[in-house]
Length: 252
Ligand SMILES: NC(=O)c1ccc[n+]([C@@H]2O[C@H](COP(=O)([O-])OP(=O)(O)OC[C@H]3O[C@@H](n4cnc5c(N)ncnc54)[C@H](O)[C@@H]3O)[C@@H](O)[C@H]2O)c1
Image 1 (cartoon, rainbow, N blue to C red):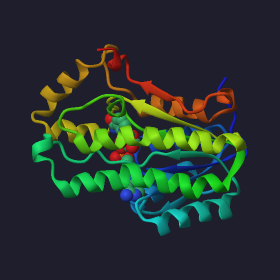
Image 2 (cartoon, helix red, strand yellow):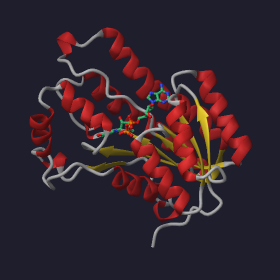
Image 3 (cartoon, rainbow, N blue to C red):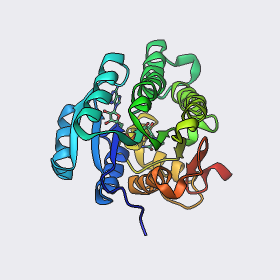
């Protein structure tokens, strides 16, 4: 039986994206009210319309901007109440280029969104959380091993593990749990972009599929199921951990 989130409040960054929205769907179906945060205001509004205006609010914000982050945390708290669950999930893949060709400015941008954005979220949301709440950070299998052509992304996704472990220790006295999820390739626009960037998309998809023993990309809803488990009371003794959802990709 799926865990209940009845009357609980969640914030989801990257709420305009596929994994954020899949997680919002599950949380709302389990009774939660959610604040979706993203810089893409148009897609945010469309997602909130799908979820229902009584179940979700949209907050346009840039996660790299400290004032925006303080404002989204404050507005979600003021509008919906104390936060039970925080999905710190917004992220970008950055360019595909070997390290010698990797543009410096793009490297900084990827760290700003994927690392500073996660840090600012923890900084401003955790004080507004209920004791016993849960945070999940989206890393990647690229946070657990090297990925040639993705220096900025791999660094950022390793870096958030340090934030996750520190936040887990800082949150423990209030029983706030913090974990990270590490998906391999998810069926998404992000992967479609990466396939196009790397050459012939059909050839690239086949190549990527060859790296997943279970033989297919992960569905956004399958990531959402793991996230919701980690946020739920069933996971009440799980904190400070890294959870791959990868179809066995880390085995090879
Ligand atoms: N798609 C995959 O294959 C895959 C695999 C592993 C990990 N991930 C991670 O999952 C997370 C969600 O990605 P997704 O697959 O849903 O992709 P997505 O592109 O659909 O969603 C990412 C969202 O983040 C938002 N965003 C980017 N920069 C932002 C900023 N500065 N401020 C606010 N919002 C911003 C985007 O507008 C977008 O809506 C990311 O952290 C990504 O790195 C994705």
